[in-house]
Image 1 (cartoon, rainbow over the protein chains, first blue to last red):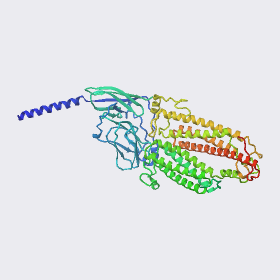
Image 2: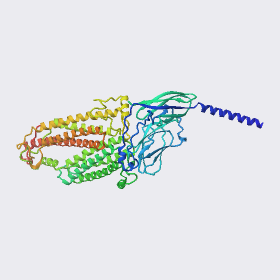
Image 3: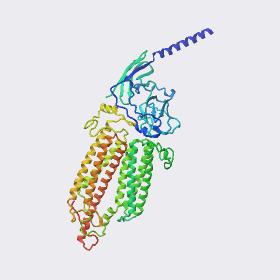
Image 4: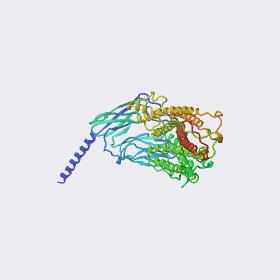
Length: 239
Length: 390
């Protein structure tokens, strides 16, 4: 009798393990490379930064804007890639926070993405005052403008509504800005300097992959995730 | 209740009014710098400044955008104080009831301006900045008008009407109704300048930088393409240091409207100058018109000719500043100068309207007085005033 109970438990355990394994096996990644054709406009030197004594001492060379981060083989960074139209799947509340820092009177990183309900921590690593001014355009995400003194407490933000390129700026130093995209699902990423992106653990199904660059606009591709990684490459062109 | 009598000239009051107007102009300038430097939200709290009493904010913290915004608030407080003093002074010392109420209006307007500016910060409402900028222009016109109405020049004209000795030659220093066409054209042009300032305020408070980055063409054409593809292309090519919003078709069209209205204003001020010159040439003076009239009262048509030329010069300069704003990629000092000259142009037009209207009303009064004298010569007082051509 006792051995019967043990056997029953082993069988149940094996069935459960197979079910989990089966599910995991069918989730796959969407991967790709993003490139740029054409010559982007030249980046501008941020001369006002160097004219500000607090900020200038943190830079040994003249900083420039970074609207187009392009690699030697035309790889394009800072493209936000996501699954279009997928909502209500956020796991943001249980995810670790994402950090946006202010260093050298510049926001770092400049392009980032989070989930709805996920905490965004804004730090001030500079020896000068900043004001962290979030200017959402989507309904439901509140605008805020807060002081952040040097060495002061981190500021926390949580957004409940999806929004592309929600702007963070500093009105004390108007050249400072960062763009935070908020998604209602965990399936998104930002392309790295080598142009590559990976959206992990996408459940099986048909999707429209959307790649958005702040200056170059948006492109989409339809894909189907079955039982292996799916590749979706994008090529943006400067007009 | 105060009698609506003629007021005596009070040079202290007059010069204080002039000082208030000048301080207001400086305030508009600093306000322009705030917007040009995108510093409107650099002090997140109001009426405190980073938690300090605004008058006690340490000077070593006036850095970056904070310098412009905080200076603007301090100067606004000074203008508010000066306006309050002016309003009280007018109420107590000016015998003209309407002037007392003008002082009250100035006080209420400056309070409203202060509240609007504060709410723009605390409520994060960019649109309030448009109202704040527009009312600033109206308030400046009001302070200039108060200065004019307390001037000896204005009061001397009124005194002449009330029966004090007139010059022997009735043609010197007496009012005549302003040419009807000139009067109407000045009024219309002034209103158009005000409309232009509203367009400009709407443009600046889009916080999108230059929607059109070339002049005299617009995105390489006489009239720019505002299709979605074209606008996307403009945004892709735009590399700006500041965190500006992407430009939209509406903003491009708004700037084109601004350019077209500027051209119309230029044409109208040329027409005003021509009309003023033509009207003035109808009145000949025995000495050739080069010397002021007895009693130091300026011959009105000659004043209008000078005013029209000054106004035209101001508008031509303003057009140049507008072009320079684009060519310098909206350099803060150039853009702010453009704001200031716009304010001056509005004030000049408004004051000219006040003078022209006053002279016309006064001329009607003169005609009636003349008619009464003719019917009752025993009513001694003023020499009958000459009425000029319409």
